[in-house]
Amino acid sequence: MADKHLKHRSKYTLDRQIPGAFEGETITRRRFMTGTAHTAGAIAATAFTLPALGFAIGPIFKSTPHHWEAVGATGMFSDTNYVPVVLTVSPNIGEAGKTTVYVRKFNPEIDTDPYDKGTPYIAISSRCAHLGCPVRWVDAAERFICPCHGGVYDLLGRRVGGPPVRPLDRFYTRVSGENVEVGPRFSVNSELRRFSPRDPGEPVDGIGQYLYPSRPGAQKL
Amino acid sequence: MPRLPKLPAPPLPPPLREPPPRPGQANGKGGPIEEAMEAGITVVDWIDERTSLSGAGRWLLFRKVPKGTNWFYTLGSATMFAFLSQAVTGVFLAMYYRPDASGGAYESIRYVTNEVFLGQFVRGMHKWGSSVMVILVFLHMGRTFFFGAYKYPRELNWVIGVVLLILTMVMSFTGYLLPFDQRAYWATVVGVNINGTGPLLGPYLSDFLRGGSEFGATTLSRFYAIHMLLLPGAIAALIGAHLYLVAKLGTTAPPWQKPVPRSEELHEAEV
Image 1 (cartoon, rainbow over the protein chains, first blue to last red):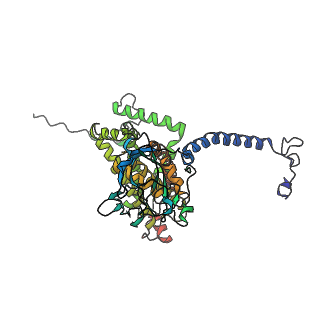
Image 2 (image 1 turned 135 degrees about the vertical axis):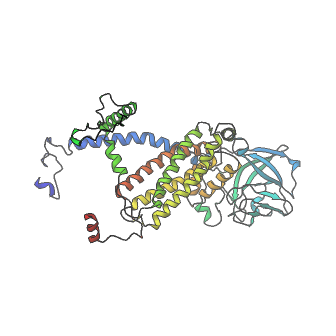
Image 3 (image 1 turned 180 degrees about the horizontal axis):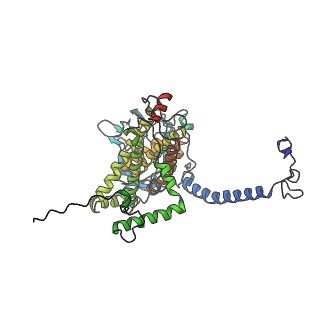
């Protein structure tokens, strides 16, 4: 036991005078047994914890395929005012999975931003960019107004008042035969530049686009 | 000669009196109540001989408390009973509830409220009880803060208490969605988006809560599982740790309690 306090002890248990030590042994059998039992326990615990965790956080990485939905005939929409249409964004949960989208024909006099070029129809989401309440288009004011916390947006969906951090989201549109189809959602910054869809409350201007990154599941169109 | 009334016999001197029956020595003379008591004592003894639980019970319950202990010290127990009430009413509500986002959830809550005997009462207890619990948690926290009861060696109990506070808020948040009416739906949409405004991790947190990028059928079942499986167990375990530390470390005297000088303390002990 005198060598217990020496700085460099022998790696052989026999040299350390541990009772029952074998020649050439570098670890006591008691210690080896303890380590084996702990390792087996850790492997068993990991074997059920990791799949369960992956199961719970898997949806973050799931990418949903693009979905196009016909919302009406081309004649339904004017280029000066919005027509509300109902879109299913989350299937199988009835009314709770539907959202209102405001659709208007492309108007070269209003939609002068370069990003909108070639878009046949402008489809603006009714989901407020503050915290996700449903905005409505008020004809008399020519504004989108949110009932929850007073967000106000103009004809193009740009914020003109209240707490929202970016303009209203938009949807891709296309014409298929006689029908107008609405596709995946995208977010825009205050210059109407396009970004992959973000959740409400997440700014995409300046540093915001890096602080609130695009999700792994978001796919480019 | 008129008969004189019979006088009572004079009391016997103590050595001659018959001793009163001792417990356990009734010899068949005890009534049914005594027999029941005997049976109860036998059962408790049988368990205690095999578990030594009575020692733990004495350790937990028969503690010395400082002078000046008052009604404010009951806020912690009040919070625990609020939690127990939530647990019991929640279990019974779960017997009727269906976490079905396509209308079944709302319908099951409507059924509990309007059709089930005492359903509205039990649901009301759970609904109002949640507010009561949150209020009691904050009052208990305020008592601990203003009495300085968070100081050494009780810092860890403060930390556990803060975790319990957060878990209570998460319980309130996840429970709010379950009726699945308009208020529940929009409050959850807004609440999830508030979680999403945290930089960098916020967007992933909202995706985790919703179970996807959009509010869907899995969101409700996710909230339901968190509300009734994940968190109650965590809260119960942490309450156990909280109580263990209270019993181990003891409670503090209120700050206005003057320490008794050593000489007076000795004097009191002599008297």
